[in-house]
Length: 132
Length: 132
DNA sequence: CTGCATCCCCGATGATACTG
DNA sequence: CAGTATCATCGGGGATGCAG
Image (cartoon, rainbow over all chains, first blue to last red; front, top):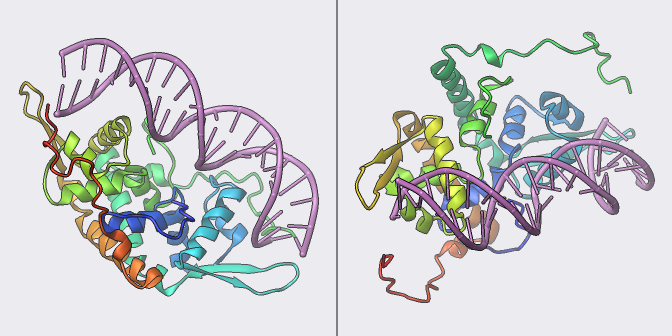
């Protein structure tokens, strides 16, 4: 989905959209931005499975494609926040639908959605909020 | 996205949905089924980039997850058609939106959506409809 | 903290061949 | 035609280190 080439042939609009938000993590990233701007490490906590590298890469592509905005506060230490752009916000409805559909799917398949509960691991329960 | 394990932890519904339709080709396959049931090789023509193996695999997973139905006519030579299931049909609205969003995206980025036109290559213009 | 570059491995994917 | 199995490959993506 990271076509850098300026032009590529598409057959249907869906293909274009998938090139933009079809990445393995992109929809999930966008979903977490629906509730407001987030910092880099904040997203990492929300999506523990994603690696540092992948998050950075996906964010860059999403920014390049104009679905999210990168707000660099130009502070030191660095502070950067990501938020849905105007175009990205057009996906809010879809993302919301995906959320509900997924929950309903668990109900259908397993009878309940309990396997969605967050396992309350966390070695340090009262984590010091990234002691930087 | 091919979690065979019966249970896996999810944090938000979006993750579940992405496990079902987040595959590289799945949304596109579903989109092509919106306009009606399709046969295996029919889908291959609609999505030339996908390999035989991948199409088979993605179809199996989509069927397993209940978003599409496999209609085996049990004829010889074999005839099988795929169509959206009831659950799969719930995505029609989204797929339609993706289609329009993609077209609009091309307009925004390039000013027009011309690069979406099918290039009329085809060595054999009047292909014999799979002369089997 | 945010972000980029390198190295490297493993698994997704393609090619091919075979079955029904 | 529809679908599976096997094998080789290639690049996605993880781990790590460095920079601003």
